Length: 173
Ligand code: FEO
Image (tube, rainbow, N blue to C red; front, side, top):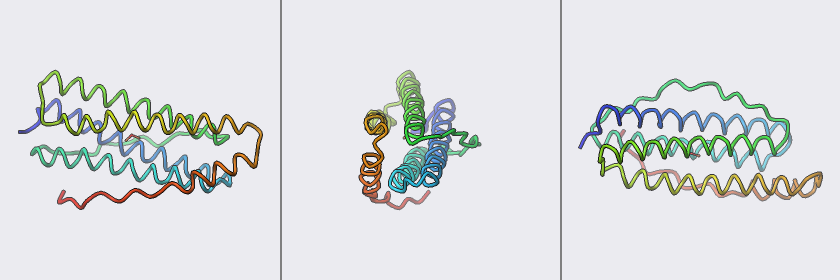
């Protein structure tokens, strides 16, 4: 069953926010690559890729429902990064914004009684808890390193070892 026009718009806004998230992470990765922290840069770059997977999940849902996914304009990722802590704090604030957007989407879908979007939205509610937890933990660990350069380099190496998640299955969209 098709999503209502209002819900279609709300899902399209989420599609745009996911691609905007990808650009934020990609820019943060650039900043940390320039700061000689290749492991953290790699972690952020993989997260940028994962945001595109998120975008595609929403696109696939709209296509499956007979709706029209549309990617909107995204702002340039204006990030100011003077330290690795800055980078992960920006990431955490961004995830908090995405979480609130997903909650809004859930509220709208519930209000309309749109049962068919529930599995997808439940996935994203859980995903956001995980993403905020993961990034929040990195913020805490970067803080713990303080002025300990070797400690920061160990954390950099650990984050660089983040496994690449398998790519999503092919879609006909
Ligand atoms: Fe797609 Fe990190 O939220």
